[in-house]
Amino acid sequence: MSYLLETLLGGLLAGIMYSLVAIGFVLIYKSSGVFNFAQGALVLFAALTFVSLVERGVPFLAAIAVTAAVMIIVAVLVERLVLRPLVNRPPVTLFMATLGLSYILEGTAQALWGADVHGLDLGIDDVPVSIAGLRLSRFDLIASATAGGLVALLALLANRTRMGRSLRAVADDPLAALSVGVRLPRIWRRVWSLAGLVGLIAGLLWGARSGVQFSLTLVVLKAMPVLIIGGFDSIGGAVVGGLIVGAAEKLAEVYVGPIVGGGIENWFPYVLAVGLLLARPAGLFGDRTVERV
Amino acid sequence: MSSMAPTAPLLRLRDVSLSFRAIRALSGVAFAVRRHEVCAIIGPNGAGKSSLLNVVSGVYRPQEGELTFDGRTARHITPRHAAQWGMARTFQNIAVFRGMSVLDNVIAGGNLSFGATWIEQALRVGRAARAEREARARAERVLAFLRLQRYRHHLVSALPYGLQKRVELARALAAQPKLLLLDEPMAGMNVAEKQEMSEAILDVNRDLGTTVLLIEHDMRIVMGISDHVVVLDYGRVVGDGTPTEVRSNADVIRAYLGASRAAA
Image (cartoon, rainbow over all chains, first blue to last red):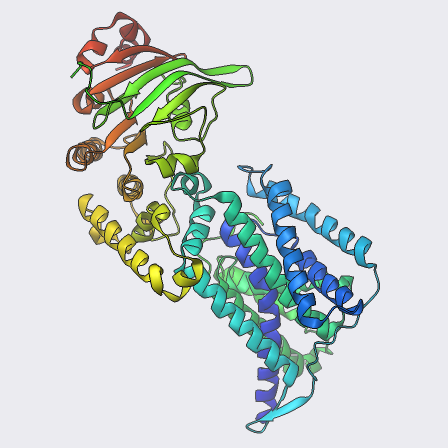
């Protein structure tokens, strides 16, 4: 019984890490209806910038501050050079632009910092801790606390501020949003900055777990089923989706894996997502069906 | 009605010209909208009516001419300026925030009146608590004015067309505009809905004193609610006066009324 619980909790904690990546997508999808293919590249770019600064002797907190500033500069550039020239184009055009952007970001990261694999030490020992007789990963606990705090902050921002309301307004009808005085470029800069900062946190946690390398961009593949399950436009959905995916893949690996010969952790979330698509095309918490991604 | 108003007009356009590459949408358009009047722009399809409204609200930048609004003159403005100066608008194709409640739509209309920082807003402290309360109170007044209270928590996308149009009007009113721009507010409505919308526009004009500039096709409605009619044809002003004056203008009859009578 405690083994089942440990598996379940371990899965949930890992799932929070997926949520963290998914939230970056949700922020941009909510405000512009665009699936941001470059989110994985933002995660890599942030993690690589941070780790390279630390390796060059920049103190930990200073490196975080500098990287955060870099992510905000990236957001400003994206708004100015990509989004503004493409205003009023259909979402599929913007999606293609984010596809291109992901290559530019990866290329820039490589040109600036090289293609080596870096280890990232956040100073958190990944030792098991015992809570109520259950052995849990200390790293996972800290990661999920971080993610939880971030989610609470973003939820406050989205639901209670004028910016949140403007964000939803822009997503629904950009022209009408302009007419009530919303500054579209400013909203975009802020949303992309937020997505970049979320990417930084996700990059640090993922980088600490599996090393900072180019395969970090592939965390988006983990975010896909999370988004499908939770809905593309719901931050709460991204959290719950992440938890479901994390728990389900661990449980499936442990209890179904031996029957089919193991290795199902990687594809099980997709099966889950496809199953859910059949039942609820908008995801568990999505407002609307996703027409184009 | 046709006598000169004692005060300066609220909106004045001088020689406004707008082209999209080779297509000339507006040429040398000039007219004025007096304070507290209902001014209708009429004209056949493609006459440039919507382009004109888009110039006034800052969506399009005209290549020539200038615009004076409430004492401020500019060559062209942005939608943000238009909102800040006291204009609010609705769109020909309904443009509501579909995923939001009626109340949130209307609150969003008063977007510019928030003075608090986002931290204050998130925590509902300081100026934000008051701003949010005031925005809500203002939205509730607009909802009551347009008899939308019972729908306040409905998702806009779930409402019938006529009501969505009224929500759009409510959102525009929430900004407490000096000038209300309405692009075909009655397009696609049935007779009863048109009647209701006409009454709502007249209520806004009389009770709130809001100046209204609207585009409308239905001549009976235009003649019924307008103080002032401007006729556009091929991007030029071909008539400007009271409904009675315009109705008897030969150019106007040729450009618009004749066609509409033949079609009817």
